[in-house]
Image (tube, rainbow, N blue to C red; front, side, top):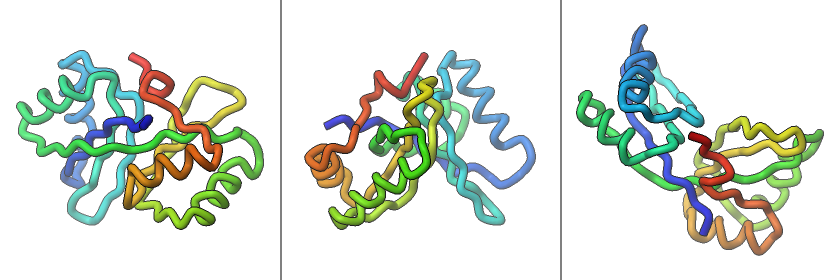
Length: 144
């Protein structure tokens, strides 16, 4: 299945916290391909797509960050009015529960890329592929 490895880590909700993560990745020569932040008053969950997740994870751990690797699906969505609505019609029809999602720039004028995390990644990947949804691989999304 075309799943992509994503790195998640907790960061303090304070000035400079995101900058520290980016500096660690820069110093490790790891390209940050996508980022999403969900925050609370005290901390945030930072989700990253990296061109080298193993090197990025090792560098962040060495800098004192706690990381977790999980898999996400990259879905190619027509970049037009209703493109994402059509994908949601299929996820609803298939009974798939979205845990979270975020958009990624793809460099394509006709296609947006949306990253999805479902409650059952394997089943979601199989069902979406069977329903004709375009699933993208790491080579399509991660540019180093």
